Length: 596
Image (tube, rainbow, N blue to C red; front, side, top):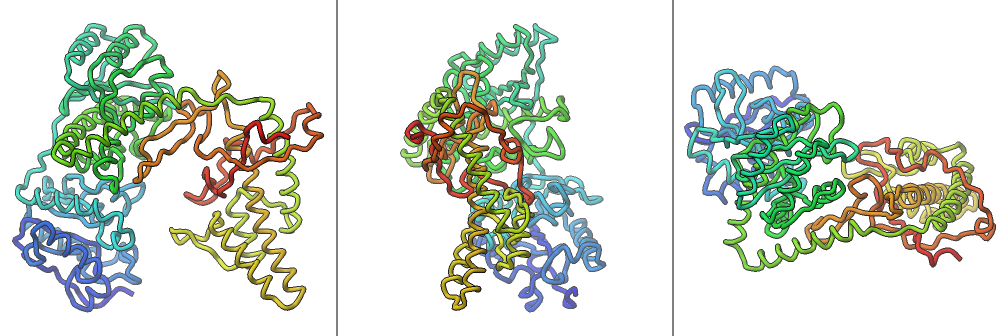
């Protein structure tokens, strides 16, 4: 049921800034004033940090009535919401503030038409962007969206981004214009050798160059982009033409300082295509980590903080965000322009980062130089890889397939039906319908069978078994604990097979990883498969022994790997609930000392 008490706007109607939320909550309804609950207090505190009181701004909502269960979706299509949007539209037409701050997904969508995959999503992409209002008669009105304060109460790590966005709103409230950057985006192909040479000669005179690549799946070079200023960028479309190769080679091998964002990936792809990367001087992801480790390091975040470029990471493919490799359906003309914009924005971010670093503590620069050195070290490790003993790998494969068959057979018997332990749907049916175990939920409040749930249920069933008096009851609880443990063991064996034993080697027989520096707030490295899709995560190679039966050592016949453990299969039935490299905390060694 929608609330019956109307919560009016609050503040100075002549203010140059208007904050638009979604709808009142219970406390707002009680006090008949917007943004007075916990989330409102958070907004008031941040406004105060930037020199504003509540009375100096104008606080509104799309709807002036509290939705049922405080869920805005319950207002969709209601007369109360239509009236609220109509009232807001009329107010903005008559007052025309310099900037409207859209707080959350639905104000973003209502005021600008922007959204993620569906309306009511996408705020983490568009937050901090300077956008045009799309309501009739309000074209040109400046809208800056940010996270709703209620989201910060749920996740305190969002506070720094929210604070950054309010700082932008404060600065932009001084003028009505959008003041978006103008950039010259140039696409260069092998069709005009003279233009190509002129571009190369111009770029070779640059003081520094931002470099970015795009690839087609599976990691085939699509283009190499260069920017010699925030205003001018060039996308050189890749082809096997000798002139294109020579142009890219001369630019990358030059001693001009190079700027990248997550250059760990780009430099390795270029290396595979035979290109050097000389004088790798600055990586904007490293700069962000050194100065502001609590903030996200994605380029879209850096662009939203250091530039006035609105969110563009979906421009190459409208229904997709930025990605390492693009599929065949991507619009290539848009992709080339997108690559140019990445280069120009990376250049601008670097300039702003360098100013900030020079004004900050000396330790920033020292730490930055150290991390850039570690990027080069990681690159050497990437390319060296690890030589794999194929004979021992085959022995481990045989042993693990036998282990998988034994554990799967035991699980099927205990469960009472043939179950795919990699299917979260089937495992949840076993846990919560067949075994009647208490439900476990993940962070998204979805019923789950992830590793945390399994460990918790094993402990629960074991405790019940120990405190039970009747032998039959102890037996039943023991059987339930065994079933859950067998699910974990089957997953463990399958994970070891798919992620470590069956993974593809490079042509020279080496397993490679792509090491990322830095990967965490604390500076810890992380790793994933190499850029060509081969290899593994070199930081999670298991350490536990694998028992090899004597008969397997003598037996030279091959084994048939069950298709459900092949590494190409995605076994997850739940969004974001697939197996990860550390899913079960399993460590199974594949080193030579484990074959006895």
